[in-house]
Image (cartoon, rainbow, N blue to C red; front, side, top):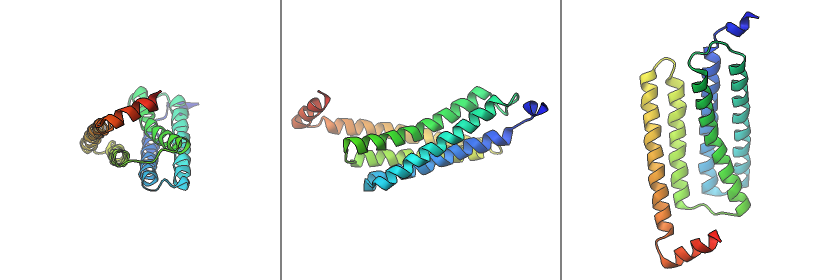
Length: 176
C-alpha cells in the first residue's frame, strides 16, 4: 500500500534515458537507411520504434502508480512524448519512403545527420540531468542549435526545389 508514496526518481530517469538512447540508435539507423536504402535497415528502425514505444508505456505506467515524482509529472510526460515523437517521425519517414519509392537526396541525408547529432545531445542531456544540470543544459542548447541548422537546410532544400522553371512545373504536377 505504501509503495504508492515511495520515491521513484531513478525509475523515471532510467526510463527517459533509455528512451533517449533508443531514439539516438533509431536516428543512426535513419542516416544509414538514407545512405543505403536497405530494407533490412528500415525494418531495424521499425523495431527500434516499437522498443521505444514499450519503454514509454512503462514510463506512463510508472507515472500512474507514483504519487510523488522527482519533478513535475507533466514535465516527465512531455519530455517522454517529445523524445518518442522523434523516433516516430524517423520511422514514418522511412516507411513512407519505402511505400512511395522515394530516393534519398543529399538534403535528406544532411537533415538526418543533424537530427542524429541532436538526438545524441538530448541523450547526453538526459544522462547528465540528475547530477550535472548545468552540463545537461549545455547539451540541450547544442541540440537546439542543431535543430536551427536543420531548419536552415530544409529551407535551402525548398529553395533548390523551386530554383528552375522545369522544377516548379514538376512540383506543381506532384501536388495535383
